[in-house]
Image (cartoon, rainbow, N blue to C red; front, side, top):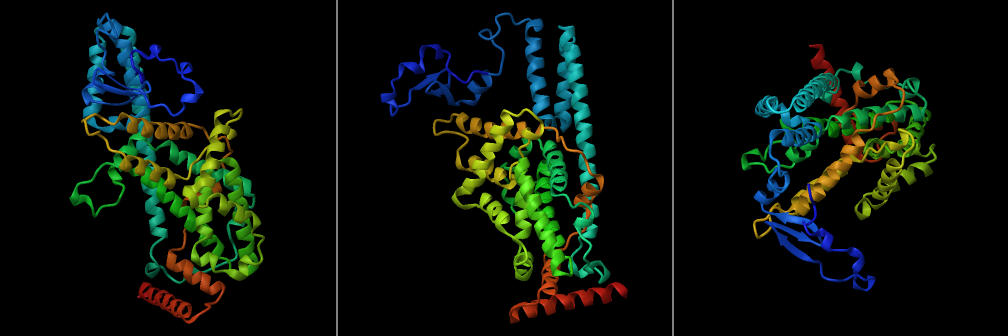
Length: 441
């Protein structure tokens, strides 16, 4: 659909001298649409819809054979980009009705519509299976990660067996993290961003920011980040011996570096978050045995100061690499997802939907579309790495310590430094003893 005025050919950017770089933008109205410097910025809802509707101006011959291919093209784009819209029975019914109508006018379009519906049904079936597997995994993890008071003593036994016995190659480990990231990204539909930020009714204020029904895949991806952070902290706090904890720390620093090299910024940030948790950061004797130069560089790379300037610079570099990639590995871009969500949220909240004259603020929605479209290009990349089933299974289902359990494990590794920490350790130990007795009754 046109983003410029019908008279765009009259405006030649080359006619403007470089001396006029501070000229006033050219404002123009045409057919209920408002343009600035030949770019559409707003319009009435009716005028914007009109751009999508075949008219005499667009298609002089309005016979079905002429219009049908355009309808098929529009519906193909819709079902490929926003397939989750058609989980609504009314939408699917309307799509089938459209197929039935096209059958009377054009055989090629009828066949195209049938193929379109078949692809859509396969996609929705796959989505349903993925969501069922997520629900199963979440239920299993919830059973394993029950609160401290529900666990027995045996479940909290610390050991020196750790992730290094499963996979001691940081590059392979980073590759498996990338597999999980890219799979979960691929199932997030662009309409989930819209639904996640939809205005809530006052009665909904007590509910989660994300509606499980409306943005379940998006929420599951955020939960994966949290799980990975706690898993990293658990693996570091679990070993009894200081030298083993130091080895695990060094390993995850190397994994974080490999994630950065791959372009997997979400796993990178989750690892840094896990290593910066208080139960881990307070292990001074353990950290003293580790060369932290590489870790300090990675922390600086994801530093939130200046609106994550360093990270955004690295992300632009990864995006540029992806656009000129010669291999599938070079195409990988996995953004720090929570920041992406915040960027879209504040763009949505910071700009009005309608201008004072009642026009739809097309410029705002165009900016939103550009951000979501970039995300769509990232999620379409196929992960090129070989799968390691054992490591993948570990990452998805290995039990992790809760916040209290991490704190207790940290105190057991390196004793309390003051009275407050001693009181906390005593309280946590009491809770474990109590839960152990209750479980045996």
